Structure formats: structure tokens, C-alpha cells
Image (cartoon, rainbow, N blue to C red):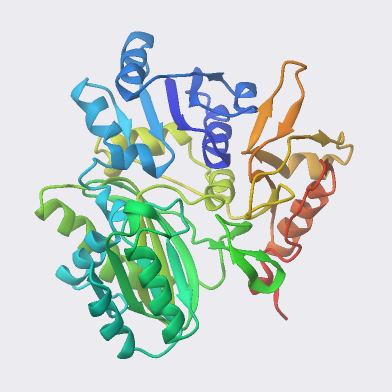
Length: 424
């Protein structure tokens, strides 16, 4: 099987690693890929999605997997399908579940899926009036895509109003904030739950927990994610059952009834409040860095999962996961997330410990390979050190041992990933 992976981050590198382990996969292409994906396959540069579809047809690509949200919202899946190509991901219509927070919240309301009390508006006066009815903290969200940064949790009503004013004026997020969602803050614990869907059926992956804040103890600014682990003991069989009955089944049935069946990855941002799941948001792709800890747990061939989902045949698949744990620690550049950092050469020590070598790996993200053949840290989140183990603690320890083997100027990371699961 020939596979094309669209994207350039650690998520796409991790999907590539999973495909590389699959004996059915003959060759992998990445479009555009990053400085390290060329170790797994071939990187492509392309002018647009139409040109990429032409390449896929001419090269005899059997399956295209789309990693990031922007191409999905832009309609890459529709274009490939029009060309008769097999592609994993939702249509542009279905991708509105992430592309528009207003569409998503209204969909949840229409189908009785539990979510926080909210208002959607382009009027500051209406936002201000609704804010007055809520207790602080208060959540303010830009409607459009903001690369994971369009959500503000305001600790006071005044700051919520300031956030709403900044978004609606265009100062904060430009056109993405021309409409906003204001909602009540839910007090509980947050989980990332992913389901691979084919329009009718789904496979739930082990629940993960992301660490959004820059600093230990969930302090500092929000980031794209500083680490993750899976599966989390915070999700039990009862919670999975509630998610299936109250969220996943109504969502797939509702999307199909509205003429936009959902195929691809449905990412449930879940807040668990007193044992009850409530949906914070939907995304229509794997989270990053959650993907980096989920892919190594996949026991079944990756091509089986993605291809059967893309062709509406998940009911024929038997998808299994290893009974193990994975912890991923993001290693970021010096100035992340405030501003870009100067390029820094990455040096990875040779690992002599066989147990560590067999139970850990690096997923590369913000890296560039220069003409000298060396890898340089050039992005904000540079790479993810992933450890595997029979317990969360063992996986965590291996991830941090691997972090210690990685060196570049300005390297920073959290030292407490998976702390929620390891608290005594």
C-alpha cells in the first residue's frame, strides 16, 4: 500500500512511524513533512491541494491521511474524493465541527448532547449582558480556527468583557473572532477522547490527557500542548459508556441526518463534572501531542484502521490496542510560546540501554534538516520524547530518560507530565 500523509508536525511524524511498522505499507510520502520525516518516507512540496491530488493519482497512492485541521476545513477531502481518491478525514461541511465553534455548539444543542450553557453572538452588548448572568471564571471563544489559541478563560467578568471586546474588534484573532461564543466555566477534569469514524461506525481509542500550560503544575500561558499520556485512569468503563450513548452515537446519527456524515477522527474535548461527561469542544483530527502517545499503543496495522474508516468499512475491522501506557514529553524551543527562537542544532546521544531503546522514541515536529545533514530546532514545539511501559510511572520515567539524551540550545520542557495520574 502507498500512503500519503498531509501535514508537517509531530502528529504526522507519529502517524508515519505507525505506518512504517505496518508490513502492508510499501512507501510513505509526506506533504510537506518536516526535517525528520524524510527518514520515514519522501517529503513533497506542493503548490495547492489540486496539484497534490494529481500527484496522488499519478503515483497510485492508495490512501491519503490528513493530519491538521486547516486542510480539512479548506475542503481537501472533497477535492480528493471528486478525483476518485481514497482519503481519511471529514468533508469541509463536516469539518465545521471544528472550523466554527458556533456551528459546533448549535449542533450539540440541536441533538441534546451535554455541553456548557452558552451564547453565540457578534454583538458586544449581547456578550456583555450574558457575561453578567455567569459566575467567574468565564470562557470566551473565537468562532474560527486560531491554531488552538482562540479560547480565553477569564478569571473575572471584567476580563471576560475585555476578551470579548478584543475578539469582536478584530484585535485578538482577526476574522476568526468576528463572532464569538461565551459560555459558563465547567469545574471538573478534562480528557481528550478520540474516535475514528467512517460515517456510521466508530472505534474509540484509549482516553488521553493533555497538558496545555507551559509550566509545571499547569501554570503559565496556554500552549499547543506540552505533553500527554494515555490511557488515563480517570476514564473508566462507565464513562466510556456514557460517552458512547450520549455523545458519539447522537453525533454520528445527527451528522448523517443533516446530510454530512462524519468520517475521520472525532476529537472529543471532555470535561468530567461529578462523573458526568460534558463536551467542551470537538476537533476533527488527532490532537497534538495526544497522537504521539496514541499511535504507539495501536496494536493492529495502522493501514487497517485508516483505510477501513476511509472506505466506510470499520464494521469489518478488528482494532486492538496494546495493554500498555505511553507518556509523551514535548521539548520546546527557548522562547516558546511567546516568539520564535533562533535555529539550534539538535544532538541526540546514542542510547546504549537496550530497555530504553526498545521502549522509547522521538517524534519530531518543528525541525529542519540543513544541507550539512544535521537537524535544527526551528519551530516552537521541537519534538516529543515518548516512553512506553506497563505502568504510567514506568512510561513516564522512560520518556524523561529520553529527554535527557536530547540537547539543543534553549531546550525547555515540563518535568511533571502525567502528574495527575501519579498523585499519591
